[in-house]
Image (cartoon, rainbow, N blue to C red):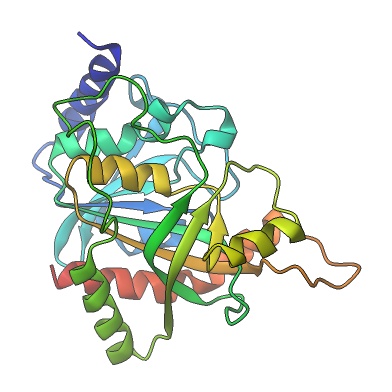
Length: 275
């Protein structure tokens, strides 16, 4: 058997055992500083990553490293309180392992979130951006022998983020009085923040926000035909016209994400309720 399938099956088997009667319908990936959404999940069952066979550990700032299973928006959800990044030294097989485990468990939708720099000059710290498309500068997680039981060798990526979920989110945001942008997310490897020249380049090629995650998870989900909804919290202005004393700071990014997490959590909850 393919060792990747063995790892997925072993991890999924353990998680299923821990779930008991819980049958998660929605998977949620929470990015830097966005773990607060987990606090809104009712009757939570916590499964630490360190207890799951074959799972890596999350080392990024603001990532606690747990699956949280419970009720949100009237649905059983399975939230990743922290994700895995390529910059942590993990191969893509491990970066997307949780998505494939959630697929095995039976999720029908995937919601992804991240903290991102606002490349678009109109975006301000604390803004929310619905992801409508992406530009991938990370290795593709589907490189290598195809996992046929998950999906085809060449999956379509014409609509990586589900148009119906995007339209519904925009409508709900308007009704809730929550301002959202809609834009294109670009992911690079990190872990260093990008240079002003790189930010300018990203803007020129069509990016609105930039980060170091999310896209591999989306590709793995779409490979398995799971509809995806994505949202970025703008935590810093990723511009090329900084003041002489400006610097990007990881703690500031997490603080800004925390400040916006309540609005994002409310919107996610309402969107999940509408499924």
